[in-house]
Image 1 (cartoon, rainbow, N blue to C red):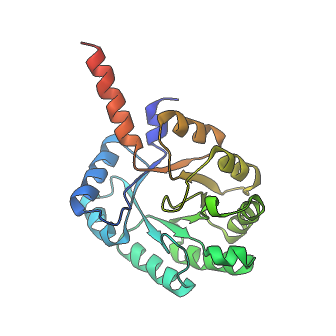
Image 2: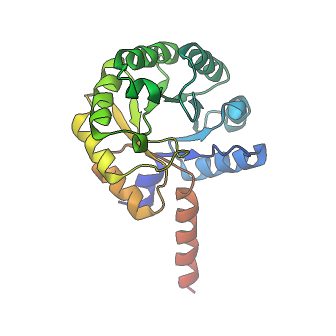
Amino acid sequence: MDNKSITEKLDHTLLTQTATWEEIQQICDDAVMYQTASVCIPPSYVKQAKEYLKGRIAVCTVVGFPNGYHTTAVKEFETKDAIQNGADEIDMVINLGWVKDRKYDCIKEEIRTLKAVCKEKVLKVIIETCLLTEEEKIALCQVVTEAGADFIKTSTGFSKAGATFEDIALFAKHIGSGVEIKAAGGIASLEDAKKFIELGASRLGTSRMIKLIRNKKEEAEQNEY
């Protein structure tokens, strides 16, 4: 698997609380250079980034982030606002308290509500796997499928752990037809990125991968001399 096969699946991400426009602009430039799937950025920068990118790369943003306990009405408003500002893709966080209460119908209805707003835009559902049991993860594969989302996503990157190989394999086994898989959080090497893709992830959410690829290219060029 070459680097292009990785970069074309990247949601090149910057969601830190202190992110500045200069930093957002840089990841937009990197995304264009390496032709990533999207840039994933805070909602407050969506309009500016959309205007800056001029359609060269999809703009992704987050809803209910990172804790997921916003009301459905708030998440619906966030989604509408993001799309009005130019977002092409929405990564929403589910209500994890509802998971623990086994309110799967409420989660399903919330996802459907946001997908109705997104229409043809991509909706990814973050379930924060590090906080869930295997039984809950399997149940959520069914919920996400039945709700009509486009992706199930492992993590926000803001909890106690990120994507694992085991979770991607579990998703691949239990997710329904037409739903893709996004691994996110803690993807620290090109080797790990390749493994996640091999296990079934068609998107990777990461802030590190472009830097790793660039460093590897620079090292190879230096070794030529």
